[in-house]
Length: 563
Image (cartoon, rainbow, N blue to C red; front, side, top):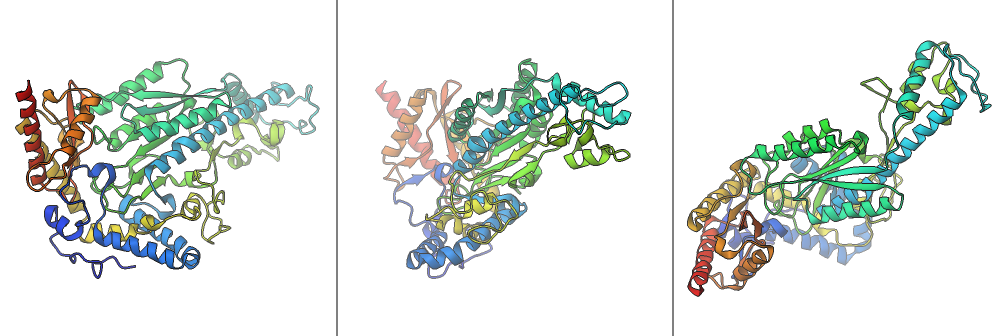
């Protein structure tokens, strides 16, 4: 279905994109009249031409749902997946899935996969200890001859060479002296989004029934932020503290979660500097909440960031209908079960089960036989499986392995298959993703829009801080099209004061035809004052913030006069 403005109305593509009030008059006339919308960061907005595509898809479904479901749905979802891979994440399409919301993505990773991963790791540790106990029971003399003392296992009859014996003995020592972990660690920040925290709490509850503990460690983020390096220091300090905790094993560090751009307060995190710290500390997986990143981060290249999971919304800043999002994962995590590298003791390189067997065979004597291990394998070759990612809604394509075509729709399986066929529901917003991305590129200028919004947001923030005699809460490198500006201290410094201020602005009629009030995010309390989050979308302009400036000064005058 074509996006370009036609019977749907609106202007045609031009070399000079329209922004601000001119864009509203052309493509956002459906916005409530008289309301000044300064909170795009919360829910986003969708232009009329893209809404027309979405409405047409919905109408096509209602006209003949059987034909749509059987012929259009799966190819349309795959087209959306390809568009996100090429135009947003810059990744292989096999490594990304289109979802309805980042909340769904965090449920997949933090609510379900995390619990499954910890269970798998715990089971693997128990299995390795069982192998060692069994191998130790058979014995291995100084000449490397396995002695079947007490087991009577018929495989314990051959003699290994000294290298094989040393490997077996080293493995036994390494595993038998280690403890089986029952407490695992997930790292978050103090700005972790509520739904992500709730997903982690769900994983905690699931693990508790198995006698396992998931401990949440927190990186405290101080706001306001003086410089980007302070954010890196906050992570470094938290990791040093974690390393000093004698009760924490490096194998217990299962997942680290942090924002690319936090919501409130809005802060752009130096992802490329933080991830190496987490890797060096030993965290097995890293999940980045990129809810606000598409449309805010120039030349976003998700795979190059170095995380294992990355999720983001498309309806906030890329103008898709509500709601659309994506989840990217490293290729190995997309499969149903992955053989994690089994590292031979004393070796710096990963060794698979197959390669251990191959390299350990000397003159026909196989370590997998001579060590009498469970399943005829030594502890060093017991392969740990990483559990599959699954959509929390169990439907037709659930559990079909990636690469398999035994799906209801005949396409490849895996998480992508589960996400594209979830039963009868409204898929129109996700199917409209290619149209929205085409609009963003042709009508808004793509990267040009990001540069424009960031520059205008910072200029507006400087104007407000000067007028209110306050300050900006982040340095420029930590700002985007959302910027935090302090309000005068007369408005209070508590969360309730922040909610009251938001209500006051929304309920008051102001100048310049905005009789329906000003819509903002709630004001964040920190450092003994309230902070207002600016959101500069393509349909906003600096004049909008002049209205906000005057409204706040008017409210300030009212407070002064009443006192």
